[in-house]
Length: 379
Length: 134
Ligand SMILES: [Zn+2]
Image (cartoon, rainbow over all chains, first blue to last red):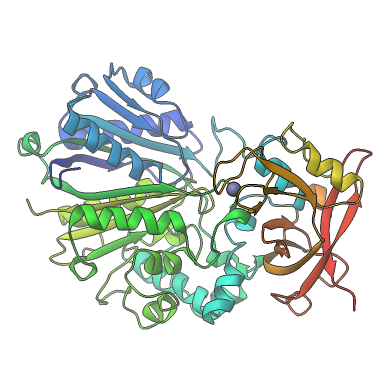
């Protein structure tokens, strides 16, 4: 992708976040889409490209009355929206369409119009993981962590510190689900979910959605909002089974996706002013900081404990409070992107003053997939 | 409640028949010698279709795990391990560590474990692992 050739011109979350028992999954997609179109000053007839995950782009297009010349149904879990941004940028560059709407909506908590979680017993996961009692992300995403902790001397306190610092950010976000301060002891005394993971090291389960609208940088000048340019993008996938990850100390998908995005953007890590790392669980920011190359393997725990990612630190991270405190519907990647866009527009609740480059890094499945988008507000 | 069980496919049937018969069957590439899991009809390292099935030793070490404190309804009510072991032949697989307390003190990373087949039905036995004896 040509850096800065495509921009975000519309961005919004659902009107409400949290518990929304009166709206179905597709209704959440539509609410977010309508909010993003309003933000961009567009109508459905102005959109000629659609991308979504969870539901099909066919459902989305028809529901909103859009007749697209571009449809992307890439569905690789919570980072799907990072991949949608990447593919949309390429599609706009290639002339497949002019204006792409990317939506997310999920009734994670209320389960209104939502499908079940599970795998066919004949799938690889059904044959070689499900029989051993894995339930949902808390018993799958967490599987590699004891190995990582042994390799690098990471403690339960280190995991707890991730949650504590993110709660500090959440306190500055009126829309965050959890805003009350917590301590390391609070985290370590919260109910055990799957040792070594306690409840406060695990993400929320909420309802909500978000949408983005992308167009060419040329056209972006004529929109009401300050354009947020796509500077670089990356994606990769590794394995549908967490037990088959090549290295339990590091995600190959993270490394490949991150490197691709940084290479494309042509920036150094020191250039990054703001960072979002998808945090379904407290270990993900540790893996992310290392696999994206912000710190060396094993250094992330100290980097976080020394408050580099906290308020006032040199690399503000997960400034909305993250999946641990802001919201997590199931496929959180959209909310990381939304916060990056807000930071680049200068409208975030916990605004990082003068931020010019933001990195939004997502995970899909249980370290199965990854997508990275680097934004800038400078043309 | 009956435990969730695998449904073998043509590509994996040899593995589950092996478990039923008390043998942990892996596959290896006859071109590049790579041993791999889960089962498939070709080598994931070099793409060769020239692969063979062989009986693994059943020896492994404990690579990583969690102790699930909220067991799935078919897994009983007590906290239990969900583990990944590294087989002596190289591949890793998910399993449960059984035959010892389900505590961090008893489940030490890198400890030697050995396979034990847990009969579920006439067709399906699950390969579980227990601390190695002696
Ligand atoms: Zn081979």
